[in-house]
Image (tube, rainbow, N blue to C red; front, top):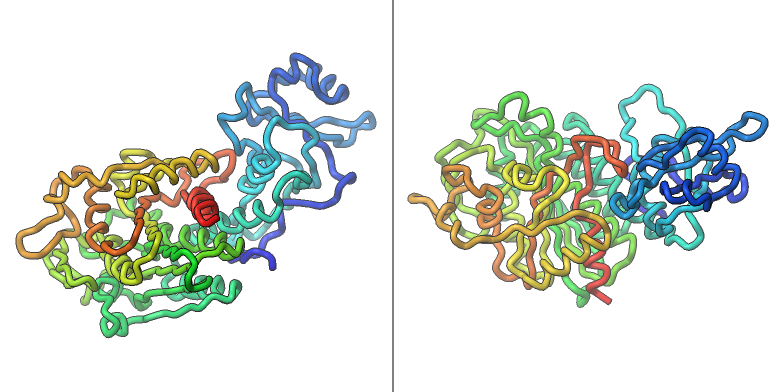
Length: 463
């Protein structure tokens, strides 16, 4: 069975064998020492080609046709393990293969695939693209699986809210469940109150598109319980504490946690990992209406803790609170939540390095190892108990928006921690879900973050 696709697109790979054009991926040392194909070397020297990182030089045949290409890796290819992503956008349309490259077959193929991503759903004209033959010593199925997970996350985030509101996100979630024969359920609107999800209902009730809680179950009872929770705020106006227009421009990505969790779930199910998988996504649109929740309101959560609303723009942690409490009730072996939660995390680490929080030292070590092995950047930030006082408030158990703004990513994580008590291990990921600029392995826009590292960790922890 082929991996699930939210947006059907042609594969970036080919299987045409000898009919493909060669790519010589080289460092400056290859040019200096002459250790590449003689025809390619002669052309490179005549053109003054230096093999700088990401540079491309097309090679003609004797009769003036396209004969191949030289691709520069720079002096230290390990610094950019997915540099071949640039090839996918720089090469002329056609079928290609890598002739020589001082990179592992999996890395060069995955890099090319990641860089091939295009979000052209709303483009009137679509241009043809280059394809690459996956080397025989690469794990083609694993590469395609990871690409499918990453592309699903990117597609969902990139889709504007007029086509990716709560109803449409539910439809995508249902399609994913159907593809992998998973059980799927949904609680919508006022039924959230009947089923004791008061905070999810509170945040989403002002929208014309009703709030909902999505749940997927897959795998076999008795296997390791892995539960994934993702923030699904399809658009965030900020509520009555309304955002300025400039801050709303990217708020279609505020369901990036849900998108990434779905991408991770795809990889797990497609690989048929021996886990008891549960995916929970609270889905809302934080809108403004006469029934919108207000600053100063106090609400009781699913766990029973009361929460004072000191800022309606700190809504993500509210819906996650109910979802985490629900997830925690089954005492999972591993509980992961992902959310585009705080600007403070971006100020601390920038858009490309998502922080995670956990009080499980072994899990933290294993996640950092997985990050390095997959070149999927992560960094641990502390659940510093000294800031617990900041989430306390006079009239309720906790506040959703501590005063002062200091250590905002940490206090948000401490808030969420109050709703997890039974899970054997828990980690919270405060992701950005967006690449502001083009990179070798990404054209920019919606981005999958941490899910390749998490997949690697889960895959290797169940052996």
